[in-house]
Length: 267
Image (cartoon, rainbow, N blue to C red; front, side, top):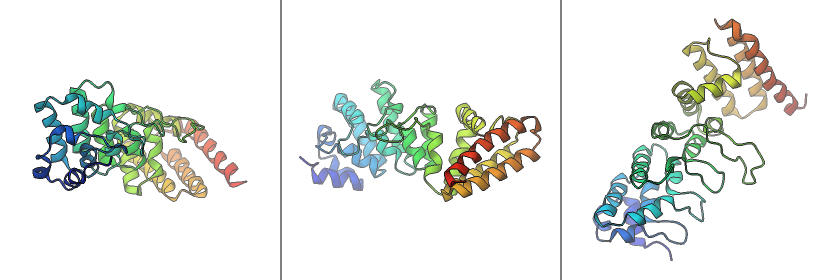
């Protein structure tokens, strides 16, 4: 049966007084759609409610119910509560509370749990929406930045790392911030960046930022011709940079991308 409407509304609106009238077992009850008071609160950024429910499970010795609520995969969304929370902009407090609760319950590798639709982790969810603060906190909490998802339900395409999904959503500023964070703060992000454009270790921060600007500008237009123009600009930047010893390798990598675009355009 559906979630009790009093509980649902209280969780959605942050009405702690009303929720405190119920046992924590009621708040962790999961309906046929996979909803619980904990999930509703997480979706609506009600951190006080989330913290209250987590704290009450220990007081009322209901940790087993909390474990079930954390790992439960919704039949409708094919995701658990952490995946859902990762989709909500600036939901860092909720994400932190959920991961800390899972760690305390010794749920193995919870932060990298996979959904049943795209085999994606919470970091994939945040990256797909270019949610910078969520990406930042998930990485700090230990998210695997090289985890691979499927890009179709059938799994026909190669798996994608979170950084490869960033350009698919969000505005230019969001994409730039997310790409920049991956490249500058994670070794894997820099490795991906170098692989995409060649050996770029000779570039300084300003030049890397300029490439990121070009990349996010072209990705935002989602136009093959814009991608072609962006790669022309990147080649010029690489050619004029101090990293001349890396230029030929970078040029070759960029030309491979240009060749692909030309084929797609029918040239």
